[in-house]
Length: 195
Image (cartoon, rainbow, N blue to C red; front, side, top):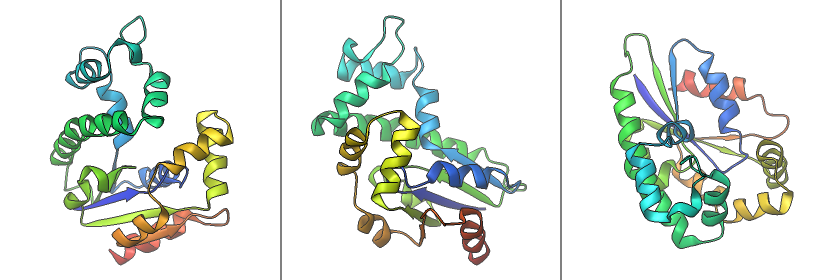
């Protein structure tokens, strides 16, 4: 069983690639963002740690996380973003490693960790290979606006605080240039066949 990390900036196509991979019977996809959402329900240690760090202003009246308030806070303040990342890495990496341990290795050939902050969290050290997705900035902005229902300036600000393509290219075993004409299914099959 091989562990493969998939990473890249917002709008690069990680979710689309994960959906393609999910169609294969020999693949188990662990989506780091989904793990965070699952751990962000009232009563969890992770959510309590967020409340202790950021206070009630990032919570709704029903004690659920106010994702928009938290996003506004971290996208406009480097210190807050680093605090959230440290908290998240601490809880999420443990949870992902736990899920990998529970994968049935007789049925699964590839465990995919879909993680935007794969390198920042240190999760690449648990991967046999890392694949980065790279896309043109305008295409990324278009995808982010559509996905998150935000304007292009907000999308651009979010991209500006993320690593540049060069960062991913230098640290990865494989790179997929996810342009408008890219056949992601073909590209990932080619890589999996090499592995």
